[in-house]
Length: 187
Image 1: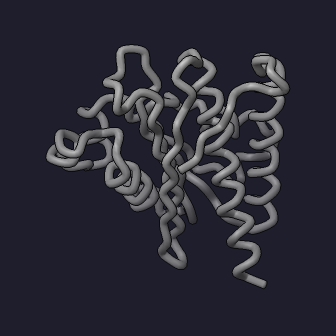
Image 2 (image 1 turned 60 degrees about the vertical axis):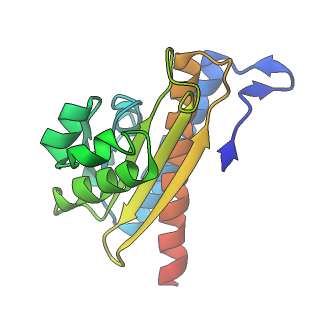
Image 3 (image 1 turned 90 degrees about the vertical axis):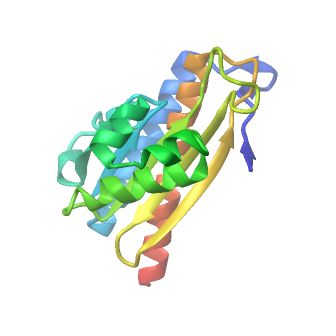
């Protein structure tokens, strides 16, 4: 289970610092995609396309970025990714099995992609107590067929915007780690 303090030396991380961290994480992902020759696709819920959008800010990324789907609502998850309604109802959209299905289905629908990243969570406000700040990030690789699912917990007192930025940063870091693992496995 991962939990990140959104504080730096007792002071809240500024928007500028958060932007710089996301930008550097996106650049790292782009470098790793280029060095591996792999292509990525995204399925996002609670981040609303921000992970995908952060990567598109890197010049030259179109060679390795296939695109993404924003599947914010359950109906969209069902319609665009064929996530079974039974999974969306029980255990619910903010669960490990849904993150896994999102990653697998977007990869299945994007033949040119080698890996995918999917994000689902509840960033508040008005989230049920057991779901408030709970996020799942799934990274699926086509060959060899593997998937890693990460459970993240945002700090309760942080705003929705701070939570979204942190999840975007963590999703990019997890994607970069998966790409680095691909490099290691090839050597």
